Image 1 (cartoon, one colour):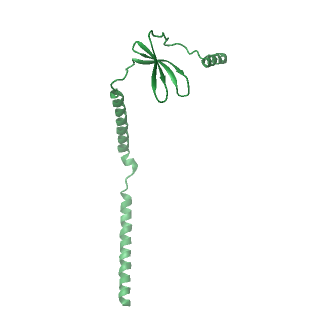
Image 2 (tube, rainbow, N blue to C red; image 1 turned 180 degrees about the vertical axis):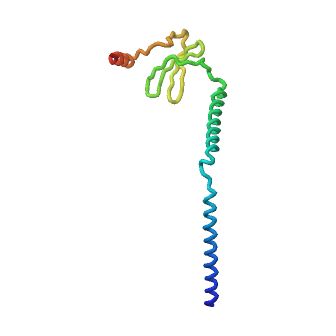
Image 3 (cartoon, helix red, strand yellow; image 1 turned 30 degrees about the vertical axis):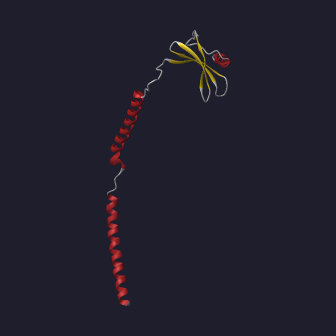
Length: 144
């Protein structure tokens, strides 16, 4: 019985030694076949260019064909706006040749009045608020 255990022990240790030698040889072989990033740099760059091209193409298609039916196409203009609260405003809109005064809240938009004769508004009128006047005066005084 002791003799058979000794023989089994010798066989196991021999098998373990042989396997470790084979494993050491395969580790060297595996280490030699590792690819380096410089070997596939061109493939990485080509993939990057392809992804960027797809993104730009998708943006162009969305911009070109994202017109929805019923869009005003420049026929609707906000002529003036007046804030009457934190989230409430009164807007003067021009739709074609008509002008409409609307009230805008956070929950709805209501027509307040439809003007019979349009209000004449200068397109490039300078701002006439007190803040803009003081800012312009301050900028003029700083110039040598």
